[in-house]
Amino acid sequence: MEIQPSDMGLVARVTHLSKHYGAGEHRVTALDDVSIGIRRGQFTAIMGPSGSGKSTLMHVMAGLDTPSEGRAWLGDDEITGLGDAALTKLRRRRIGFVFQAFNLVPTLDVRGNLRLPFELDGRGPNAQERERIDSLVHALGLSERTAHRPHELSGGQQQRVAIARALATRPDVIFADEPTGALDSRTGREVLGLLRAAVVDAGQSIAMVTHDPVAASHADRTLFLADGRIVADHGAMTPERISEAMLNLEASAGAEV
Ligand SMILES: Nc1ncnc2c1ncn2[C@@H]1O[C@H](COP(=O)(O)OP(=O)(O)OP(=O)(O)O)[C@@H](O)[C@H]1O
Figure 1 (cartoon, helix red, strand yellow):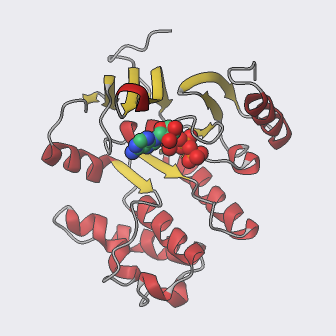
Figure 2: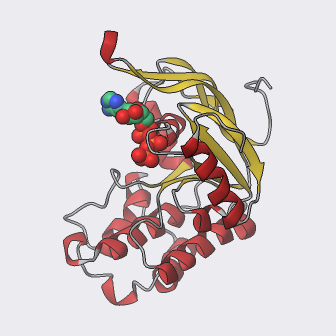
């Protein structure tokens, strides 16, 4: 099905997206003619074997990487070909990131990191937003850590600060790459619960790359990638069904899942 730029209800979308790295015999195709949209108000999980193109797809959708071919939109705004300044502004206003490579500012303490998205936008958080930051800090078990800098926190605590920061501004869409990867299972469940609440209570949209079938089972929709292509697009799935689908995919590229 062709996705048209005018489609409503999609918070991010790409059409005929390909991404190649390198040239000649070293050329790698990370994405191969992908057309897909992330639906507004849904929690979408993106799964697939290692190297199948999951992170590349999220980076292009979030305007952090440019496609070799194809087009990308955030809401109704086409981002393909936008300059750095315009992209930065769109990202700051509309997107929350939970990416390993998009980490915390080392010189700022936890509170400073949480205020940063507001300050980069030229203002401090208002009373309601400060309240929201406080409730996120509490829910994520960071209340005792607000004056600590990132190097004084464990990997899991840093990950939770990044999650609080992504949720703080209530962005249209949150892109998360393995948000529960560095967390114990209890904290992981809390984080997934917060992401779920962002969707259900605040109508935000989430796209999450994960290898964890339990994490993906919190999603409304699960996309499977293999060899740079979307090979399946399912509704909510149980962890068992997801594990089975992953095993099939890993056993034979492009298998029915
Ligand atoms: N900067 C780069 N230069 C060259 N090749 C790259 C680059 N980034 C990614 N690739 C290649 O593109 C393909 C897709 O990578 P990508 O990181 O999107 O996969 P992934 O599904 O997120 O993998 P993983 O689950 O292991 O994180 C891989 O073959 C990878 O080696």
